[in-house]
Picture 1 (cartoon, rainbow, N blue to C red):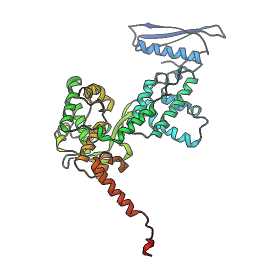
Picture 2 (picture 1 turned 135 degrees about the vertical axis):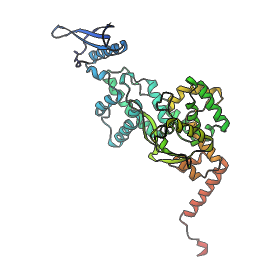
Picture 3 (picture 1 turned 180 degrees about the horizontal axis):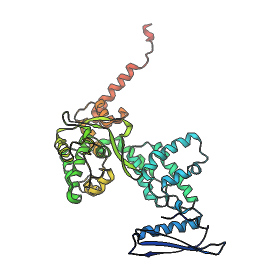
Length: 399
C-alpha cells in the first residue's frame, strides 16, 4: 500500500470502485478532487482484496477531507486513538482521579474494546462491555472508573469528527449492577438442583450444537463439578491435572484481549487446588487420552481446536434457547460455578476449605453459599470469637 495522502480540508471528493478480476487485488478504489488553491486536479487510488475494504478506505478519505484528519486516524483502533490522545481526553483531572481512570482504561477498556476501530464502537458494543465487567464481579467503583475514561476518549473522537455522537454515554448500568448484587447476595438461587439436571442440560446443549460436539457438554459438566469459571476451564492444561490424587491445580484463565483470546493468571492472581470427583473422572481421562500427554496441551477446546470463552460456549450451543426450554431462564454460564459451590456447601465441605476451593478473598463471599441454617450457626460462632477477642472492661462489682 502506498504512502497516505494529506487531503485539503473541506475538499469535495468524487469516488468509485473498479472491479478488475485479472489482478491479484481486484478491487481498485479511487478518489479525485480539485485543489482549492492551485485548482489542479489530483487523485489517489488503492487496490484491495474485497469491495468492502475498498469502500471502507474511501469512507475514511471522505471523513479525512471533511475534518482535516490524516486518513490513518479515521481508521484507528480505540487503543491506538486513545493512547495518542490520552492527554487531551484526560485534561483537567486531578491525580487521585486520573490514576484509577488510567487503570480502568488499561485493565478493562483496552482488553475488551481496544481492538475495535473507533468509528465502529456503538451503544450496543459498550453495553456488552459494561455487562461483561459487571458479570466478572468488578466492584461498582471499578465499573465507573472504566466507563469514565472510555467516555472521555470517545468525547475527544466526537470533537475530532470521527463520530457524530458519543456511544459511551450509557445509562442504566447502575440498575443492572444492583440486580447483579442482589443475585450475588443469594447465589444458591442460581444453582442447578442436582446431578441429573446438570446432565440433562449438558446433553441438551450438545444436541443443539453444530455436529453435536460432545466437548461442549464436557465443559459444562467439568465447570459445575469443579466450581470453576469457564475461562479457567479453557485454560486447563494436561500438566495441571493429577490423575493419581485426582486434583486440578488452577493456574490460569482464558480471557479476551486486543486481537482475540489470551491466557493470563487467575482472578486474584492466586493458584488454587480443586478436587476432581468420581463423576467426571472418566471424561477427564478420555480427554487426556484424546489430546495426549503433552503437559501444555489444553484439556478442552472447540471443535476446531480453538480456545473457549463464555461467549463461544453460549453461541455454539444456543445456550439461551436451551436453558429457557428447560425452565432455567436465569441460568448463565457463571451459574455453573454457583452450582458447584452450592453443592459442595450442602455436602458439608467446611467453609474455610470451600473458600480455598472457590478462591474467594473474603470469607463473607463464601458464606453466601452455605445453607441458611448452617450459615446462622457459623455466624454465631464468629460472633462468639469476636466477643472473646474484644477488649474487656474491669468488672466494677468485683473490685
